[in-house]
Figure: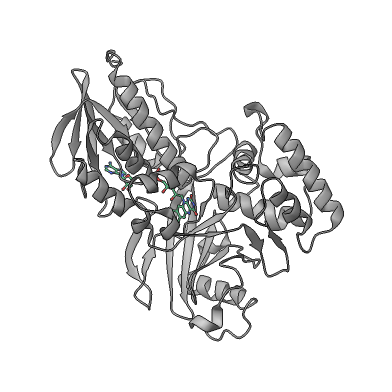
Length: 436
Ligand SMILES: Cc1cc2nc3c(=O)[nH]c(=O)nc-3n(C[C@H](O)[C@H](O)[C@H](O)COP(=O)(O)OP(=O)(O)OC[C@H]3O[C@@H](n4cnc5c(N)ncnc54)[C@H](O)[C@@H]3O)c2cc1C
């Protein structure tokens, strides 16, 4: 069986690794590098260190991503820095989970939270217990915004402003007023509600995003006979005698038994448009941006007390220490920052950082990377397109594709693996006639 995978992001890579050795794999990637929305870019900082298209944070709960890294020989233990979860900001708020078995890590973490009263902590502990008893489920018909959900739960205090809302924005890349409560509850289940050791840990890349997975995966795949066609954008797909003809912009035409479309949701409609009409939900099209500001401070002047801090200025955001003095700030979702020039944004965020480090002088060298369509906007009751399609032999993968999950590396990886498995299962079944 030969399979074409279209899209070399983390979903396409996960699909290719799952299929390697079981099928003849060809992976088409439109760009110059693998990795899609999680990759190294060509810019470097003043120390010559590679920059990524955006700061990425993984969680200990990213089970499949970590397993995939191990499979291809990219040991997570050396490529990722593991830290116990701590949410801390300049207002004095701090919640740190101790290294204790679940649920004692949560219990002591919440009880020890700073800048919040005992009444709120106990109310939150009761709420968490009730969520756990319901397995963090929010029924589809009851899905609402995270804002409404927190209102209904009486979560209106310090923890809401300094924990739940920033976490929602970071995990769903969608602010609480329009984010899905059902998806956020799922995120809480897989992180705070997860009893696997280390599930709540934060994992910060020590290497560029390309070196974390895409480049080692490329080597591993090529060693196993996969063909990787870089800078080869697929422009058309055509069902042909129970198989699929794939045409690329560079003139390649080849026929495959199966196809996996592992592209971003906004790149799917043009590929599906020319197929025989069928009843298939459109992928989510509304997107949320992320901007990343890289700042190069003198190392000793900006040594963070913890490598991840929440900024509590006008624009919010997370401050990440890539190495001493080399800081990255990520702002998620739509906001007033979009109207600012790069210089105005860098100045505003530098001033926010100066609340932690009053000795910092002038704005250091900086670079701004704006991803206008970083992820889909994770709204309540958002229809998703399933991985199985009405077109026989054609499967969908990508971070938009797993019901009830936000757009993350882990969703992309799981979805890629699922599509590859469906592809292998479909091999056993006779191919029905495509819709006409
Ligand atoms: C700035 C930023 C910060 C983020 N931070 C985090 C984070 O902290 N933690 C986290 O877990 N997630 C984070 N994410 C989300 C995460 O990066 C994405 O969810 C994930 O990378 C999506 O992978 P994917 O494979 O589904 O899609 P993509 O990465 O979009 O891959 C699709 C690939 O398909 C290619 N393609 C498209 N059309 C064609 C075509 N016609 N022919 C051939 N190739 C094509 C594209 O070039 C691309 O390489 C962040 C995203 C961004 C942008």
